[in-house]
Length: 235
Image (cartoon, rainbow, N blue to C red; front, side, top):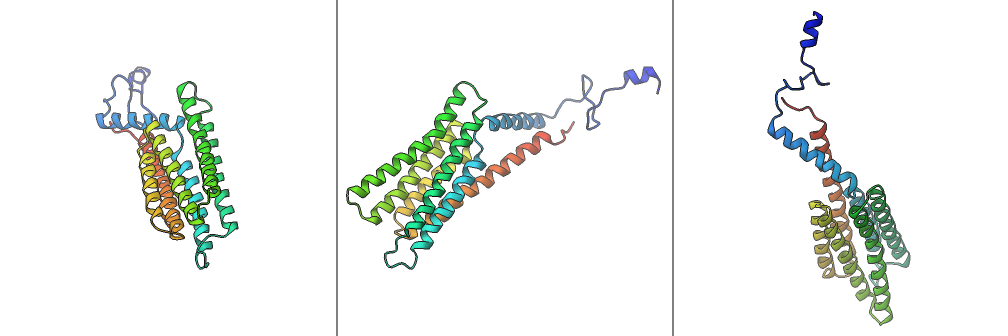
Protein backbone atom coordinates (compact mmCIF):
# COMPACT_ATOMS: atom_id res chain seq x y z
CA UNK A 1 0.00 0.00 0.00
CA UNK A 2 1.40 3.41 -0.93
CA UNK A 3 1.56 6.31 1.57
CA UNK A 4 -1.21 8.03 -0.39
CA UNK A 5 -3.48 4.99 -0.16
CA UNK A 6 -2.77 4.68 3.59
CA UNK A 7 -3.82 8.28 4.20
CA UNK A 8 -7.04 7.75 2.26
CA UNK A 9 -7.95 4.56 4.15
CA UNK A 10 -11.04 4.88 6.33
CA UNK A 11 -10.35 4.61 10.08
CA UNK A 12 -11.67 1.57 11.84
CA UNK A 13 -12.73 0.90 15.41
CA UNK A 14 -11.59 -1.87 17.78
CA UNK A 15 -14.14 -4.23 16.29
CA UNK A 16 -12.82 -3.62 12.73
CA UNK A 17 -15.89 -1.63 11.69
CA UNK A 18 -15.33 1.81 10.12
CA UNK A 19 -16.19 4.93 12.00
CA UNK A 20 -16.02 8.62 11.32
CA UNK A 21 -17.80 10.80 8.72
CA UNK A 22 -17.88 8.02 6.13
CA UNK A 23 -19.14 5.32 8.49
CA UNK A 24 -22.67 4.01 8.14
CA UNK A 25 -25.10 5.53 10.65
CA UNK A 26 -26.19 3.48 13.64
CA UNK A 27 -29.43 1.60 13.43
CA UNK A 28 -32.12 3.59 15.36
CA UNK A 29 -32.93 0.58 17.52
CA UNK A 30 -29.27 0.13 18.47
CA UNK A 31 -28.90 3.81 19.25
CA UNK A 32 -31.96 3.77 21.49
CA UNK A 33 -30.77 0.62 23.26
CA UNK A 34 -27.35 2.15 23.96
CA UNK A 35 -28.91 5.37 25.26
CA UNK A 36 -31.22 3.45 27.57
CA UNK A 37 -28.42 1.20 28.82
CA UNK A 38 -26.13 4.15 29.52
CA UNK A 39 -28.93 5.94 31.34
CA UNK A 40 -29.51 2.89 33.52
CA UNK A 41 -25.79 2.62 34.32
CA UNK A 42 -25.60 6.27 35.38
CA UNK A 43 -28.79 5.95 37.42
CA UNK A 44 -27.65 2.75 39.13
CA UNK A 45 -24.28 4.25 40.05
CA UNK A 46 -26.00 6.93 42.16
CA UNK A 47 -29.06 4.99 43.36
CA UNK A 48 -29.26 2.15 45.83
CA UNK A 49 -28.53 -1.35 44.57
CA UNK A 50 -31.71 -3.38 44.83
CA UNK A 51 -29.69 -6.58 45.02
CA UNK A 52 -28.12 -5.46 48.29
CA UNK A 53 -31.37 -4.31 49.88
CA UNK A 54 -33.40 -7.29 48.70
CA UNK A 55 -30.65 -9.73 49.63
CA UNK A 56 -30.18 -8.32 53.14
CA UNK A 57 -33.87 -8.31 53.98
CA UNK A 58 -34.54 -11.60 52.21
CA UNK A 59 -31.96 -13.42 54.32
CA UNK A 60 -33.07 -11.58 57.48
CA UNK A 61 -36.72 -12.53 57.06
CA UNK A 62 -36.09 -16.05 55.81
CA UNK A 63 -33.76 -16.89 58.70
CA UNK A 64 -35.38 -14.76 61.40
CA UNK A 65 -38.98 -15.76 60.81
CA UNK A 66 -37.93 -19.30 59.95
CA UNK A 67 -36.30 -19.67 63.37
CA UNK A 68 -39.40 -18.24 65.08
CA UNK A 69 -41.63 -20.74 63.30
CA UNK A 70 -39.35 -23.72 63.91
CA UNK A 71 -39.04 -22.94 67.61
CA UNK A 72 -42.81 -22.53 68.04
CA UNK A 73 -43.95 -25.69 66.26
CA UNK A 74 -44.71 -28.50 68.71
CA UNK A 75 -44.72 -26.31 71.81
CA UNK A 76 -47.92 -26.35 73.91
CA UNK A 77 -48.09 -22.55 73.86
CA UNK A 78 -47.25 -22.43 70.13
CA UNK A 79 -45.03 -19.43 70.89
CA UNK A 80 -41.35 -19.10 69.92
CA UNK A 81 -38.63 -19.46 72.52
CA UNK A 82 -36.71 -16.52 73.95
CA UNK A 83 -33.54 -17.38 72.03
CA UNK A 84 -35.52 -17.46 68.77
CA UNK A 85 -36.66 -13.89 69.38
CA UNK A 86 -33.03 -12.98 69.98
CA UNK A 87 -32.00 -14.47 66.62
CA UNK A 88 -34.82 -12.64 64.89
CA UNK A 89 -33.81 -9.32 66.48
CA UNK A 90 -30.20 -9.79 65.35
CA UNK A 91 -31.32 -10.57 61.78
CA UNK A 92 -33.47 -7.43 61.58
CA UNK A 93 -30.74 -5.29 63.14
CA UNK A 94 -28.20 -6.59 60.62
CA UNK A 95 -30.53 -5.81 57.70
CA UNK A 96 -31.08 -2.27 59.01
CA UNK A 97 -27.32 -1.70 59.32
CA UNK A 98 -26.70 -3.00 55.79
CA UNK A 99 -29.47 -0.82 54.36
CA UNK A 100 -28.32 2.34 56.13
CA UNK A 101 -24.63 1.81 55.36
CA UNK A 102 -25.24 0.93 51.71
CA UNK A 103 -27.48 3.94 51.11
CA UNK A 104 -24.99 6.28 52.79
CA UNK A 105 -22.10 4.84 50.75
CA UNK A 106 -23.97 5.10 47.45
CA UNK A 107 -24.78 8.76 48.05
CA UNK A 108 -21.42 9.71 49.59
CA UNK A 109 -20.05 11.13 46.34
CA UNK A 110 -23.30 12.72 45.27
CA UNK A 111 -24.08 16.35 45.95
CA UNK A 112 -27.30 18.27 46.27
CA UNK A 113 -30.81 16.88 46.48
CA UNK A 114 -29.85 13.29 45.60
CA UNK A 115 -27.41 13.04 48.51
CA UNK A 116 -29.92 14.42 50.99
CA UNK A 117 -32.65 12.13 49.67
CA UNK A 118 -30.47 9.03 49.93
CA UNK A 119 -29.32 9.84 53.47
CA UNK A 120 -32.85 10.57 54.64
CA UNK A 121 -34.13 7.36 53.06
CA UNK A 122 -31.45 5.27 54.75
CA UNK A 123 -32.09 6.73 58.21
CA UNK A 124 -35.85 6.35 57.79
CA UNK A 125 -35.37 2.58 58.01
CA UNK A 126 -33.64 2.97 61.36
CA UNK A 127 -36.24 5.31 62.81
CA UNK A 128 -39.14 3.31 61.42
CA UNK A 129 -38.10 0.11 63.18
CA UNK A 130 -37.08 1.98 66.32
CA UNK A 131 -40.56 3.49 66.62
CA UNK A 132 -42.07 0.08 65.87
CA UNK A 133 -40.12 -1.43 68.79
CA UNK A 134 -41.33 1.31 71.13
CA UNK A 135 -44.94 0.75 70.08
CA UNK A 136 -44.65 -2.99 70.65
CA UNK A 137 -43.25 -2.29 74.10
CA UNK A 138 -46.19 0.01 74.78
CA UNK A 139 -48.65 -2.71 73.79
CA UNK A 140 -46.95 -5.13 76.14
CA UNK A 141 -47.08 -2.61 78.97
CA UNK A 142 -50.76 -2.04 78.29
CA UNK A 143 -51.50 -5.70 78.92
CA UNK A 144 -51.77 -7.06 75.37
CA UNK A 145 -51.57 -10.83 75.11
CA UNK A 146 -48.45 -12.44 73.58
CA UNK A 147 -50.45 -13.46 70.50
CA UNK A 148 -51.71 -9.90 69.94
CA UNK A 149 -48.18 -8.56 70.36
CA UNK A 150 -46.80 -11.09 67.86
CA UNK A 151 -49.45 -10.28 65.25
CA UNK A 152 -48.99 -6.53 65.77
CA UNK A 153 -45.20 -6.82 65.50
CA UNK A 154 -45.41 -8.74 62.23
CA UNK A 155 -47.96 -6.35 60.79
CA UNK A 156 -45.91 -3.30 61.72
CA UNK A 157 -42.73 -4.83 60.31
CA UNK A 158 -44.46 -5.41 56.98
CA UNK A 159 -45.98 -1.94 57.05
CA UNK A 160 -42.60 -0.24 57.62
CA UNK A 161 -40.70 -2.35 55.07
CA UNK A 162 -43.43 -2.34 52.43
CA UNK A 163 -44.03 1.41 52.52
CA UNK A 164 -40.31 2.22 52.52
CA UNK A 165 -39.68 -0.06 49.55
CA UNK A 166 -42.54 1.55 47.66
CA UNK A 167 -41.21 5.00 48.59
CA UNK A 168 -37.75 3.99 47.37
CA UNK A 169 -39.22 2.71 44.13
CA UNK A 170 -40.97 6.03 43.60
CA UNK A 171 -37.81 8.03 44.44
CA UNK A 172 -35.53 6.12 42.08
CA UNK A 173 -38.20 5.09 39.54
CA UNK A 174 -37.48 1.46 40.29
CA UNK A 175 -40.50 -0.67 39.42
CA UNK A 176 -39.05 -3.82 40.99
CA UNK A 177 -38.52 -2.02 44.31
CA UNK A 178 -42.06 -0.67 44.17
CA UNK A 179 -43.70 -4.00 43.29
CA UNK A 180 -41.82 -5.88 46.02
CA UNK A 181 -42.93 -3.26 48.53
CA UNK A 182 -46.56 -3.76 47.51
CA UNK A 183 -46.12 -7.53 47.82
CA UNK A 184 -44.67 -7.19 51.33
CA UNK A 185 -47.72 -5.19 52.40
CA UNK A 186 -49.92 -7.96 51.00
CA UNK A 187 -47.92 -10.58 52.90
CA UNK A 188 -48.42 -8.61 56.11
CA UNK A 189 -52.18 -8.65 55.70
CA UNK A 190 -52.21 -12.37 54.84
CA UNK A 191 -49.95 -13.30 57.76
CA UNK A 192 -52.18 -11.40 60.18
CA UNK A 193 -55.06 -13.81 59.49
CA UNK A 194 -52.88 -16.93 59.41
CA UNK A 195 -52.58 -17.23 63.18
CA UNK A 196 -49.59 -18.11 65.34
CA UNK A 197 -47.24 -19.85 64.48
CA UNK A 198 -48.27 -20.05 60.79
CA UNK A 199 -47.80 -16.29 60.63
CA UNK A 200 -44.06 -16.77 60.90
CA UNK A 201 -44.02 -19.32 58.10
CA UNK A 202 -45.89 -16.95 55.77
CA UNK A 203 -43.47 -14.15 56.60
CA UNK A 204 -40.43 -16.35 56.04
CA UNK A 205 -41.49 -17.94 52.76
CA UNK A 206 -43.71 -15.33 51.10
CA UNK A 207 -41.93 -12.30 52.55
CA UNK A 208 -38.30 -13.42 52.60
CA UNK A 209 -38.77 -15.32 49.35
CA UNK A 210 -40.14 -12.21 47.64
CA UNK A 211 -37.10 -10.20 48.70
CA UNK A 212 -34.71 -12.81 47.32
CA UNK A 213 -36.72 -13.08 44.10
CA UNK A 214 -36.46 -9.32 43.75
CA UNK A 215 -32.67 -9.55 44.09
CA UNK A 216 -32.56 -12.09 41.27
CA UNK A 217 -34.77 -9.94 39.01
CA UNK A 218 -32.63 -6.85 39.59
CA UNK A 219 -29.47 -8.84 38.85
CA UNK A 220 -30.90 -10.15 35.57
CA UNK A 221 -32.00 -6.66 34.49
CA UNK A 222 -28.56 -5.24 35.24
CA UNK A 223 -26.84 -8.00 33.30
CA UNK A 224 -29.05 -7.31 30.30
CA UNK A 225 -28.30 -3.59 30.47
CA UNK A 226 -24.56 -4.27 30.67
CA UNK A 227 -24.74 -6.67 27.72
CA UNK A 228 -26.53 -4.10 25.56
CA UNK A 229 -24.01 -1.41 26.48
CA UNK A 230 -20.90 -3.54 25.96
CA UNK A 231 -22.12 -5.68 23.07
CA UNK A 232 -21.22 -5.15 19.41
CA UNK A 233 -23.17 -2.53 17.54
CA UNK A 234 -24.66 -3.43 14.19
CA UNK A 235 -23.85 -1.09 11.26
